[in-house]
Image (cartoon, rainbow, N blue to C red):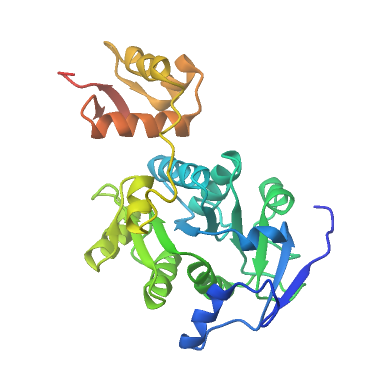
Length: 292
């Protein structure tokens, strides 16, 4: 990563995000922020936090991609924590959709973690934010701390896959304490990565099944309008259903037949499953429903 100068903001600066002042009520406001990348992204509104496990299932990755891409396309800035898993998928989907995204770090802005090509891309195309001074290495206890900033910067928090003991639940609780909307995407009842989301719903979080549900929860429908899913038109949708005629196939097999990315195909399959066109077979395979 090529070195870039960092920008420091302190309370009272013209570009200081006023959203963080709400943390004063909890005695948790940071005295300053360090920024790397496109500093103008910090002014983008509205913002939505999308967070989740570092070890997602293909379903979780597909939902993170679906929600982040469509909300970013609708004009929302996606905020997350840069961690592997749901955080990274959300950041990447927002960028791929031509949207804006902010990563809040658990280290100095000059030492983002994890390192790698995607982190380099975030610094080139998005914004990295940290309350920690330059040179500070990532530490385990920094990450729960940074979660309060993710929540405070955002209008609401969407959790996609989280275990019972998860940092994502810490972000959600900070959001609730700050009066933000907390939302959870449901998952399989027999999978441990769904338990945290289901627990949030039992505790009062809004259950969201689509980006449009997020806009409705935030009272942004009609102000922001999420586009319809980009399936490439009826021909591509029909091609997916046609590929399953007389077949029971997994996502990899469908990728090979249709030359489409796995996340896109899985999201489309889940949509067809919800609408009763497709049923899930053992072994992660799919077939057409008996009646269509």
